[in-house]
Image (cartoon, rainbow, N blue to C red):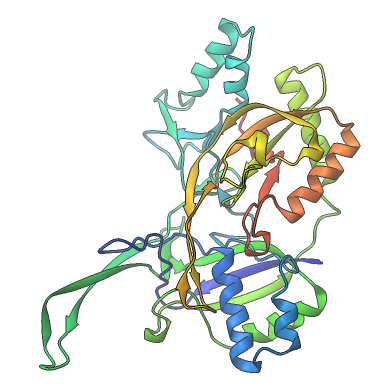
Length: 373
């Protein structure tokens, strides 16, 4: 399976509904992996029918389509533990308080740890309080949010050909242009990293040569994107970077035993407990092979919904661990074994529907070490 980069450049407004029961349904500010996978598979079926190639592409777990976030490759949701200045959120950058929070709340914490946490909640540039950050970031910089546009429409009475009384509906969409740091407007770009089988990559490259339409209202011209797929270098594997994170975290936390690591959830994670109930508890969705205990946890929760193109019906709603959730954990495994295990989990994801991009994680994110003050 080859690591690839998906890039979608908007050429018309994009509508991907977040809620169904609303007068003006909200629009997601990203492209779910399920929407990306669905539109490519439906294009293959429309062009060639349900042939052997289509059946191969449809196999669960064969390929992994990512969530596409607004920004360049490497863009990720801001972690729940990230904070920014209330007065100058973008100019003064982001800091992370996950480790400070753990040090101040673990048994035996003293005044030094509390003072360090209190200091982290105040901007060191201007002295103003900090607030929890949201949105998306690239490295340490928070990116501007995509521009949302609301449109209202009037229903037409087919008998008279004029506006029907009391029939008003609307939609929210993402504008194909977004502001940049330089003050100019640029075409909105969404990107993400996925994994495709070599023989399937050629099929998807051919599908991207034609027009690709994502989301709702495609027959009206909405959702047209220029989609490209490029092979990406894995940089020699993730194990060295993860092992370096172990050493940094041991110095920062002072934990004498085991290996300490962080996990950031970068796409909604669908997990179920042993009674098949949706769960957001990390001690239930963390793989048992890690032999890990959670030291501190800063979760978010969301609801996953969607539309089944094949059936023409909405998918069931499922509670999920939200993107941006983060945790600090400790494992009894040896350093090299743990790094290999975590790298494999980072590659395949955690939980259900990994082929649709759910359950993506980032282990020992360097952002957390770069923002320690």
